[in-house]
Image (spheres, one colour):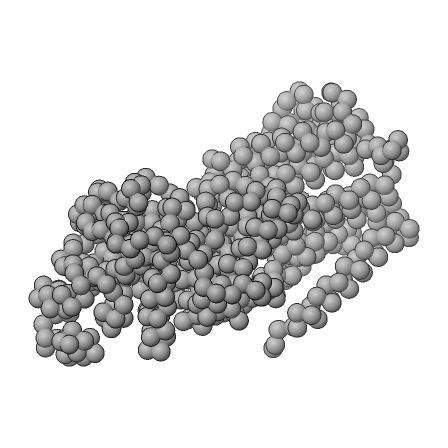
Amino acid sequence: MAAPDPAVRAASARMLIVAVAAGAVVLPLVASDYVIDVAISILTFDILGLGLNIVVGYAGLLDLGYAAFFAIGAYSTALLETLLHFSFWETLPPSLAFAAISGVVIGYPTLRLRSDYLAIVTLGFGEIVRIIATNLDITGGPNGIYGINPPALFGLELSSPKQIYGLAWVFLLFVLLFTRRLSLSRLGRAWISIREDETAAEAIGVPTLRVKLLAYVMGALVGGFGGSLFAARFGAIDPTGFTYLQSINFLIVVVLGGMGSTPGVLLGAVIVAGLPEALRFLALWREFGFAIGLIILMLVRPQGLWPARVTRRVSLPEDATGDPVFAGASAPRGESLLEVTDLTRDFGGVRAVSRLSFTLHRGEILSIIGPNGAGKTTVFNCLTGVTRPSGGEIRFRGIRLRSLAPHRIVALGLSRTFQGIRLFPHMTAYENVLVGMDPHHRVSLLGEIFGLPSARRDTAEHLATCRRLLLFVGLEAAAGQRAGDLAYGDQRRLEIARALGAKPEVLLLDEPAAGMNPTEKAELMTLIRRIRDLGVTVVLIEHDMMLVMGVSDRVLVMDHGTLIASGAPAEIQRDPHVIDAYLGNDEDMAEEAPEEAALWDS
C-alpha cells in the first residue's frame, strides 16, 4: 500500500487538532463534574506520559520509577504552600528545580546502565522516594499533607472542577510546546541516535553520557510540573498516589501510544486513564477487561497505536550549493597529522595489534590492508577511542588521544565509518547527517527551545551544510527517507556523509566498498578522491585490491596484528612477504582471486 500523501496527512492532523480543541471547549459546558474529573485525570496522564516519553521514547532508557518525579513535584508544592505560605505560582520554580536535581541524582549513577540493570535502579529510586515520604514527619507520613491552597489567578481561586480543567489544559499545552521544541532540537536527535545505536552515536561525536543525563533532567522537569498540578487539583496528597503501579501506568501510556510519538502518548493517556472509567459497568471485571484489551491492542499494534512518523518532507535551503568546506582545505599537504607509536591492543590472551607504528601525513590517502583477523578494525577502534589501547601512544596534531572519549576525538577532527553499516535506521537521511554535525553545534539548548535569532541562524547554517553534504554524495533526493529503507550502496554513501558532517581533518573509512557492485565501487573511488581534494586526509581499510591500488598514495599491510610492509602501491605489489601473507603463492592467487592476481602481477 502506498504511503499517504504528506499534504493529506497534514490536513488530517489539522482537522484532528480542530476537533480536539472544539471538544475541549465544549466539554465543560455539557458534561457533569464526574466526566470533567475524568478528563482532568486524562490531561494529567498526558503531561506525565509526555515527560516519560522523553526518557523512554526518545532516549530509549527504561524507567520504572517515574512516579518519583511526580511525587517530588507534588510534595514540593505542598510543603512550600503549607510551611512557607508560598502561592501556587511561587512554588513552581523551586518545585521544578527540586525535580531537576532529582533527575541528576537518578541519572548520574545510571548513565552507563541499560536494559534490566537500568530498570532495577529506577524502580528502586521510585520506591525510595515513596518510602521516604511515608516515614518523614515533615511530609505527614502515611497520612500525607492536607490544606493545600488552590491556585489563585487575579484574585480568583481555581477550585472547581471546571477551573482545574482549564488549568490542566494550560499545563498540557505548555508541556506540548516544550517537548515539541525538544524533539526538533539537536538534543532530541541525539536522544534518538542513542536509542538507535549508543556506540555509533558516541563514535560520531554525540556525548552520550551528558545526553542521557539531560534526558532524565528534562523528563524530571515535566514530571515535577505534573506533580504540582496534582497537588493543586486535590488540595491534599499522600504516598498512595505515587506507587510503583503509577509508574507502570505512565509507561503503558508511552508504549501503548507509540514510543517517541506525541499524538500516540496523548491517545495512550485517553485509554489508560479513561477506559477503566468507561468500563465501570463491569464492576469487579473492569480491571480484567482492561488488561485483556491492552493485550489485544499490543498484539495487533506492537509498534503502538500511533507510531512516531519517520519519513518527512524536508525544506533544505535551495541556495546551498557547491562542495562542503573542511578545516584542512587550506592547510599545506605533507605535514605530520597523526602519529601512532607502538600501538598494542590485547583481548585477554589474544594480541589483536602488536607494537604498530606509522605516521599519517596531511593530504594523503593511506590504506591499511591485510587478511581477516589482521587487526585493522581494532586499529580504527583504538584511534577513535571506541577501544582503549593496551599500550603505545596515539597523537593527533600533537594531542594525546589515548585517554579521550570518542566524542572528544571526533570534535578534534577524527571521524569514521564502520565495517558493518551503523546508521540510525529509524531516522531520516538528513537527520543522520545532522547528528554527525553535533560536535560543531554551539547554540545553547535554551536558545533552540525559545527560538532565539542565534539559534535560527545556526539551524539554517547547519541545514545548508547538510544539503551540501547530501549533494556531495548524491543523496539529496533521499533526504527525507528513512535511512533503513535506502539501498545498500546509498546507505554506505550516507554513512560517509554523516562522518563528513563533523568537518574532520582525517576520515577513517572501514571497508566502504563491502557489498558494492562494480559501478558503485567506481563511483566510490571518485568520491574518495574528491574528499581528499577538499582537504580531508583519508585512511582506508579495504579488501578490494583494485580500489586500494587505484586510490592509495601509501599502503600499510598487517598480518596477525603486526605491520609487515609499508610503502607505495607499486612497492607493496612486489613485496614477497605481502604476497605470501595476504594472497598466498601465485598458483593460489590465480585460482582463488584471478582479478586480484592479475592486478598484483601488473
